[in-house]
Every structure is written in C-alpha cells, then in structure tokens.
Length: 538
Ligand code: TEU
Image (cartoon, rainbow, N blue to C red; front, top):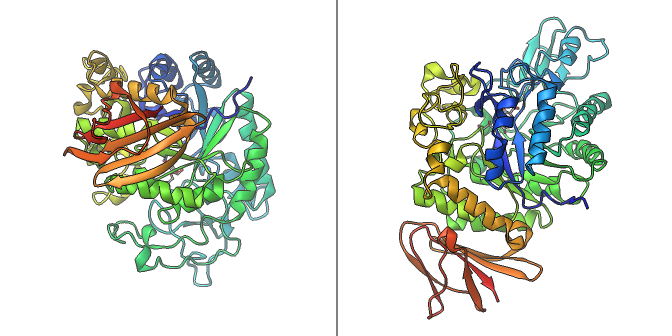
C-alpha cells in the first residue's frame, strides 16, 4: 500500500547542489556528484532529500533565478543524470524533493525576453509591469529584499517591472491564468519524472496587489530593533500589498489538486514573514487542499533557542494552526550555520539535535549540519552572493553557509572537487570531514544517526501529538503521544545541572544511547548539563 502520509514527521536532508560533490572537476557540485553520495545520505537515516534548484539558470542567485523550468543546467548535468539520481535515491529508500521557484523567473527566461519586447506581445502581461508616476519615478514604494526599489525601468516598454528579489529576478504576474497554467505544466513535468515532492520557494510572494498600493511603514512596536534601516530598509516596511495576498491560496489549491493526482507526493511551502510567520503557517497548511507543510523560520533566527522560546513557539503554533504541519530547521543555505549563530559547544549542539528529533513536525537538516560545521569565514574578495556584496560588512551574505561539503581531511578541497572550488573550502572544516567523523564515535555525525534512528523507531516522536509543555529555568519538557505510546521528553538547555519534578505516572527511562537519564528514587529528575531525558509511560 502507498503511504500517503510519509511526510508527516519525515526528516528531509537539504542539498545545496553547487557545494555538495563535484564529479567532473569544474569546481561546482553536480547531480552525478549527489548520486555518488546517496549511500552516505541514506546512512544518516533520513526519509527524503530536498535539492536546491539545479534548473537552467544564469546563476545570478545561484539557481533561484530559473531560465528553463524543465531542464537541468549544464553545470549540474543533464536530465538523464536526474533520472539516475531519482532511481538511486529510491533504491536507497529516499524520497526526492525538488525546489520550485515559481514566484519569479530569471530575466533570461524566454517568457521574460518576450514580455519585455513590447506592450502588446503574447506574454506582455506575464510579468508585473506598471507605468511610472507622472514624474517618472517607480509606481509605488515597494522595496526589494536584496536592496533598493522593487521596480526596474525598461526603456523599450517605458514601464517598470516588479522584482521582489534581484533586478534579474522579475516577478511573474499570477493574476494571469496562463502564467499559472504554464507553472503547473512545469510541475507536472517533474512529477512525471518521478519526483516525490517539492519545496516551494517564497509561496507568499506569488501575487502582488492588483492596484499596486503603497506599503505602509512598519509601526515601531513591530520593528526588530536589531535591524537598522541603513542595513536594509526592507525590514522597516510592512509588506501589506507586495506579499501575503489572499489569492496565493487560490493558486496553491490548484497546485495541490495537481499533486493529489500523484498520491504519495507532498510539498513544503516557504513562507518568509518576520512578524506573522506562525499565523501564516496556519493559513497555508490548515485543511487538506493547500500545502502539506510550511517551512518555519522560527528556529533560523539569531535569538538563542531557550526552553521558554521553544515552548512559546509550540504554543503559538497550536493556537494559530492546530491542524497545520510545520517543518522545522536550524540551518539552511540562507542563514548563518547554527553552531556559530548560537555559539554552541559540542555538548549543546548534541542536545539541540536530540531536542529537534523530538519535535512535532517534519525536520529539515542542511548539508554539513550533521558534522556540526561552523559558519565559514569568507573574505570579501571571495564573496559570490550578490546579497552579501550589496550589504557588506553590515551583513556578510550567505556564502559562509554555502562553502563546499568536506568529505575527507587529506585533500585540500576536502574531497569536494579535484578542480578549483567555486567558494573556498573552509580550513576549519577539514578536521570535521565526514570521513574523520566516521572514525570517532563521539562525533556529531554519529549523534545525528542515533537521534534520527531514535525518532524513527518511536511513532510518538514521528507523528504524535504534543502536550504538557513546561519551561522550568533552562529545562524544557513536554509529552508526545501516538496511539498507545506516550513519551516524556526533557532537555536541560544549559551548562548547569538542574532538577525538575517528573510528571505523575509510571515512567521507564529510554534513550540511553542519547545520554538520556531517568527519574531518581525521589521522583525527581536530575539533569546534567545539556542532558536529555526520554521516558516511556508504562
Ligand atoms: O528565500 C526567500 C527569503 O525569504 C530570503 O530572502 C531570505 O529572507 C534571505 O535569504 C535571508 O537571508 C528564497 C531562497 O531560499 C533564497 O535562497 C533565494 O535567494 C530567494 O528565495 C529568492 O528566490
């Protein structure tokens, strides 16, 4: 029988293909490189892989600027390599998810090339075009995430086009049903090639307000004080009209109807919104006619992940999306690696991994996270990310989390490439290579394997309900239960020992392989620094 619900509680391994494994010595990772590392990925005990974009692209945003949705960029290989990848992954029990960037294309996409040519061609309204104000300035005050106005002048049409991201990433006009149809066709192309699901880029940016109304300034009480407007004024505007439009849901319903023709397929939508993240997660995942899961940004911020914060996050999620489904991540290709972001010692890193494996929701882990890699230091001269180049040095961009994977310690490029890598391999990473860690039972790699195996073998942790959250000092605790299995989970998220009460009931300690301890004879739970407790109700 087909398991339609495999994604509930699944662990998804995110691959950034440029930096995973190069197979042809050009210094850039590729699909056949991924194929050669499938056994390694399977050995982690994950359920699926999510591959960041590998489609034809001028690579201005490293693949998040697509110029052909239905082909592989020559840098990454060809369609037949993708078929090999899907078959190899499937034969190792891994599902394959790909990254669809539907909100915008590259300015090199044939659709945009045609659209920009005149005001009356077949694709003239496939993008968001608008006349200038009488004084020649852009139609409204919308800002681009990557800096400056969200509008770019086109001399031929004497109009502006909208780009929420780079100037070379024009936004598609979703108000036009032909645009939606073309994107659904591209989606079907990959479903027919055997993919099991999608990570959907920026699903809350699909539609822009038809009247193109100005966005208001963000009221001071909603501002994140740590972001000065000089760093990126985008953060001080409230994006009422340029994103989160109600019509997004209408397109997602069409998308979901297509997925439902392929019964075991799934999708995780990326909804980036600093103020309303969890509320939107509810909007986009409640019911079974929208996205299956939303990617949550809550644990990707710099704020330390305290017991209180985890408890509050789960509480707000239960309020805003009681039937929704989140996908949690600590790291990805857009943020500082969490080892560095939260300044974690090895023991703390281990405990967060253990805690993550006990969370209700699905999980995304980002390549290299299982090795505990810190953020790489990338010098200004080596920067590749246009976002980092724009805002340096206030914001150093995303290259520090995108440097190549380290497979072996001996070779200067860590076994990633025989050529010159597109971003330097971090020297600090070499001693943490996958091969080095295989030999060391105390290494993060083995801890990830143990934590994920523990999750996988306990249905309550995979898909159970959660309840009874407590944050006592630095100790976070909660229960997970599924059918007749109930597990009490506690984590001491600090360097100092702590004692809390066990909940009433008859509990048997489990999870010794994760350093878990049980209750003492006095019914108290004594937790050492960064120590977890898992206990099964008898
Ligand atoms: O990111 C969307 C998004 O919200 C980012 O702008 C994020 O806020 C920023 O990268 C934080 O540092 C997605 C992709 O993950 C990103 O790599 C792309 O650049 C972006 O969409 C545009 O496609």
